Image 1 (cartoon, rainbow, N blue to C red):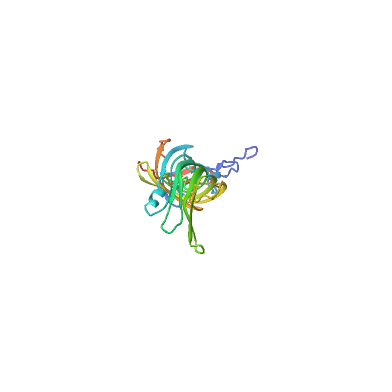
Image 2 (cartoon, rainbow, N blue to C red):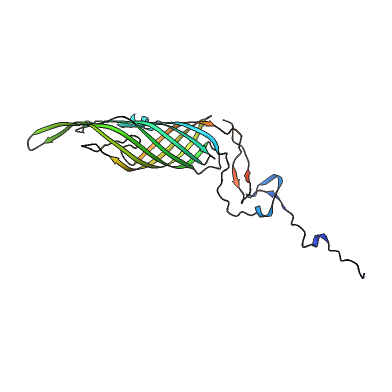
Length: 269
């Protein structure tokens, strides 16, 4: 009809806003209890960035390393015992302090000397990186770094040198030896909950000396907190002090750049 305004059907209107998609399944194909709406730009997985899921101050941990105590039962002649204190940040990064005492007393039937380290203090600062930061915090797989330092005294006594030519033996001692050592350690470890707030932690360490001063007449065989060689280990009993008590569910998976997908629940200790 002349002069009549043309009407465009709503369904064919190109300016009509796009409707959000209703999802009945999660990204693994499992049916959801209720349909979920996502905005279109959040619907596509676009390489999610690592980001924290747990609160900043999640828990504090206190541990005691008794690995050398166990090894001494099998004849190890040196020991380092330390206590550890750490903070769990987002269940992701864990700055840690280790303070302890180390000593050594080596004398065997086949040796011609006795080496003895007096009990000496050592300290370490470091951090752990938890690869399972989006999972149950009762279980961790981590890599870590440590920086340690110790100043200590030692002595080498009953040194015997035999001379087959002269048929004589010389005996002497090297006493009042002082040394210090600055060293680093790279470690890999596990943490597993055993009961309530108690856990066990294991780690293997590779150490490297950064700077060391030796005794006036000798080199130290043992360095407190470092050991006698580059490889060492730690076995600790750990007590966790919860700081954030709100229950957080798991497993947690990030869908694209959007909010985490959460299901299940962390059991009570």
